[in-house]
Image (tube, rainbow, N blue to C red; front, side):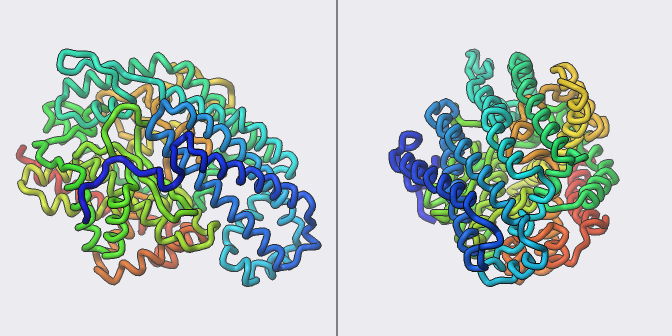
Length: 597
């Protein structure tokens, strides 16, 4: 791989000039004109007058505009993430939200056209050459339209959501963006960004540092809690009112539909996880002992054990990832090399960036961009591999119809977690010492704890929050109680100290695009683990099957996907238990290695 590698991404090849890009401004202007023309055109159409070819041309327009909106959204997301104080990027966010709302509002007219087609005519249309390649998402759209309000009412909801629903999500982002967390370091008080503070309290080897950083984090968020609680309450209130008027009786109905899965599958997954949590509790208790504590606290959970000799420079981490990917599939390795060499990754550890990580796709240029903060630890190297997995998923779909490139969040986590597993297992296998191997194994198991217990706490909290929000506003004090109660249940009492303001600090609760931004992560982790187990069993021949599975993620339910490519029934516990057995094997190995420590 060509070096040196840049730790900052290149956005200039997308639109030069950042948030002041004249080219991007022209792009948005043209897009706005086309959205307006699209809306006018829909208003003049009648389903009875449309031929099969005209339906095909109409959906070509739908996909074209949607692809350009995604391109704009990805670019603006990158601008906001790399510099949370870029006020011009925030203005672009507002403009794009308005533009997206116009497109969505126009979509209600499209939905009306879809509903005006008889079932017999619809079946014929889906089989036509122009529509057949996108039959699944088109049919899905018609079904969803039938479960909503009248088009004019849905259009009103969309219009009002710009300065209502979405505005609360934007306000939350602004609050987090301006926050700094004072922390004493080497005798001086430094102002940490939210992301830097999180890395400090979660990954420092010094317990005093973790404890002080966590206390500073809690204090900082307690000062902002009232405002953040307003954001959460009004986001929740908007959803509940919208669901009420649509006649939807379950808060989980929309997220399950978005993720193309059934409640039966979700309940089966959680039941299997609950049944297998005892070894995870034992792991947390053993880790506490290794850290010199009677019981783990929230800020001990992600603390490293052993020596910090596992750190890698960014280039070393990149080369290691590419090497391990090549063992599974040369195509995956070649893609990762392209991402590194073309500076598609923002990895620099600096102030002013938003916390967390993401991968976003750019459908027009057929590229991706990855955002994270790399600190050289095995954990952040695994995160980098994780995001590259997302990017590869987008890459194998880049030449497919735009509508079938949109896969649900739960299967979106499949490729990412799969890539992460490849790198994590290789790191453990190639450890230079028993102590280093143990540290890496702990890191891997800890990520499983996060997905099976921490995410479960988020799911429980959100369910309970909505139950109380139906009765009225929920206070900061009550939100703290709900959060701690959920954590106690999910961790089965394994911790000595919990995280009351977690609800205020987790971006996922404030996403206006994806309600219940939690259980899809757990699904993706366990689903991917099951896929990974098959890959280990079959060897190199599985790579082609893996790509075929990824390419179907945008055109079938998860139950059908599993049945077709894995021969598995996700509504039954067998598949989930097999995946859990892989996780618990790592736990068992950790317990064996630490038995005499």
